[in-house]
Length: 382
Ligand SMILES: Nc1nc2c(ncn2[C@@H]2O[C@H](COP(=O)(O)OP(=O)(O)O)[C@@H](O)[C@H]2O)c(=O)[nH]1
Ligand SMILES: [Mg+2]
Ligand SMILES: [Zn+2]
Image (tube, rainbow, N blue to C red; front, side):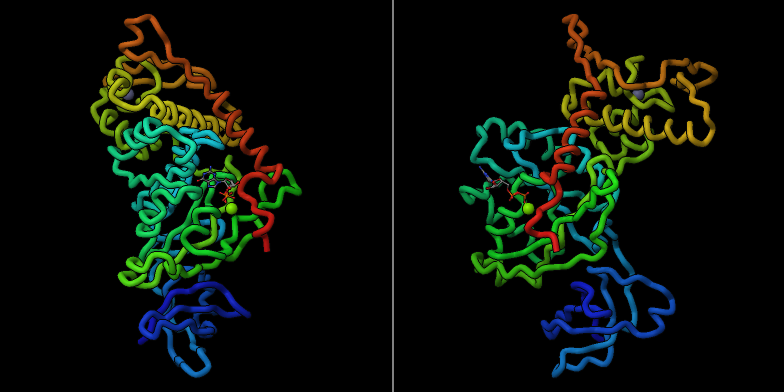
């Protein structure tokens, strides 16, 4: 029995790539599938019957189990998300980078996103090394590229070989430019948002997989089986997924390691009360800790908002420590809190983190978004 990958919907049916014949078939779904109301999405693997190689038609009989499903636009069985960030122009934003990382880890678990830093031509080598030293030790694959000088483009192309990949990142970071370096004329669609009602209402419900030919990379072309890139996910930045407050730590491996040694059972590791994470804060990157704390704060605000709407009661305190009645009540983390690193404390210095500002930053980015500068490539809207 032949099987293949759905490339997109087409004329009430689907275009399906069958690898053995290296052919795209125009397929209808067999009635039973429709009856079961199983939605077939781009990227889904399906079994085929009634192959007609003359007319390139076939029938989809079964949908195979899905490994994962990216939302907006729906795209199944994604092997990797390449998070593209510019080093400058726009300026690298660590919180936004980590918010993307958390979002796609939640969507694609257990697959880790790849981090691609673009516009390296605008950066000092020392800045790139600083970025590398934050993310590589955590297990992320980090690629430094420049669509202008061509630096790293072959590495990026190689990382796409024989996979289904999706590029993500706010508008202006260079996603289109990079894809164009790899495949001339590739017309990827960017998740489209409709701002008519103020909130992002997504009109892109279908998506497409595009085949890479690696025309300029003969070595890669020869060694690969078919490689694909999907449409760019579109979302309002405020819609980036985050988990419940207590689960954020699972998305930060270096903090998780310290958290597992924390003596408080219900600790969120943001209040310096002999918390093991805060005791070792100098061992982790400050940017990463700040992101962690900001995401916890986001998650708490959303959580308490939900509490308010369901119970109309909101406690202003939370319990820290739960062991044998030793729990103490501390103010619930709201918008402002401070982290005191042991070393800095000795020096009498404080590192103040203002999550309100961080959130405003995201809001501002979101306004850019509203202005059509983010997430929307007008020329690409179909
Ligand atoms: N200096 C520099 N500019 C770049 C680079 N890549 C893209 N750009 C510029 O950044 C802007 C946004 O690029 P674009 O590919 O449209 O970004 P996208 O919105 O993520 O698709 C364009 O003006 C590009 O010419 C790069 O590596 N270096
Ligand atoms: Mg673009
Ligand atoms: Zn703790």
